[in-house]
Amino acid sequence: MGDLQVDLFKRGAAMSKVSGLRVVARDGVAELLDLPGEVRLALSEVAVSAREGLLAMSVATGLKVMAAMMEAEVAELAGPRGKHDVDRVVGRHGSARTSVTLGARRVPVTRPRVRNTEGQEVALSTFAAFTDDDVLAEAVMSRMLAGLAARRFTAGSEPVGRQVSEQCRSTPRSAVSRRFVKATETALGELLARDLSQLTVAAVMIDGLHIGDYLMVVALAITADGTKVPVGLYEGDTENTAVVTGLLADLVERGLDATGGLLFVLDGAKALAKGVRKVFGDQALVQHCTVHKRRNVADHLPERERELIDAKLVRALTHPDPELGHRAARDLAAGPERTHPSAANSIREGLTEMFTVRGLGVSEALERSLTTTNPIESMISITRTTQRNVKNWKDAAMARRWTAAGMLVAEAKFRRIRGYKDMPLLLAALARHTTTGQPETVGATA
Image 1 (cartoon, rainbow, N blue to C red):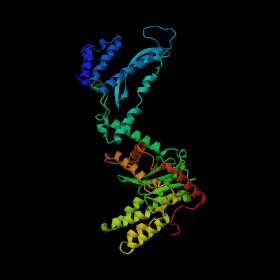
Image 2: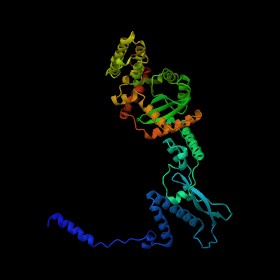
Image 3: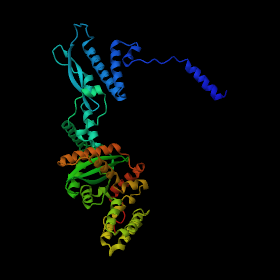
Image 4: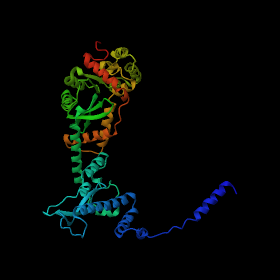
């Protein structure tokens, strides 16, 4: 007999010594255990829910635990049931039907009541822990931002078992909407009340997104350790200087400090840069997005010439020597001066601000992060995703609430910017700029 056959033979012999399995009815499970009668009854009821899945069983168990916790607190306050105590100051006073939040539903439960000797109701701390309506509000907000319609909220709730579901009070569409409005108002208030004095902000990105007939100008801060933090939201008709100035003034009022220098990364709009300089003056350095520059130039060229001009522009913008890169870009603009003057003007427009970060001497990885508006565009993209099912924007207040909530959803998904370990290089360069009073940019005299 081979070694493998011997091994299998030994295993079979060992298994033959195991006593046979005993099959029992569902209602007889608790009888196999030496447990008190009340515990047997509770276990039997939970076993019924187990047939519907683990979550349903967990819910049934949780309700039993909650009832036991409340009864234990009542016993601690009023003493053991059936034992008279002349010195007690709290006594049992029957029970009341109420509800708790469970699986994003309001589930009816029975709550024991106690009163003191003066007839005043005594609140149970255990019951208060289970009645927090914030849990339901959070569920409403997260599901609607994920694309679930208010009328489908109940259908999208987790399964909690047939017995619990039959007793649940459905959440009307109007109630879901009210909770969502309240939750998004809270999100908006939280965003607009953030204390920026607690943040060491190195860079700020500003961009706008159109929502229906409304424009929301949003701001994203990048802190000294590379963390991305949504900090501002301002509503306006266009990205004009007044709107940007209002947004920045709000940030300053909430503690945004530019004494150590600030880098602003913008999409190239003149109004944005003008608003930044109006509020912060020489303390601010402006970097225009290189990706937007390339798109704008390409839009003014015939398709057959776009690839060649774009390749030359990229080489100029990424030249190891920013002075030579700036000169190469100016020379590039001279080429299509006669055939495509609009493209030439697009190359020249704001050209100095294309090389701001490159002139600061930061690492290549950090430069890639700070020469485009990709971080704030990513936040805007996530915000738009949360709004994809909204068909009717009633007013600007609604647009502001949804935008703020979407920005906070995006924040939860953020990672630090690439090259964040080199942020001290940026901070040092900004400090030198504020000390000397001279911008560390190239082509300033061109």
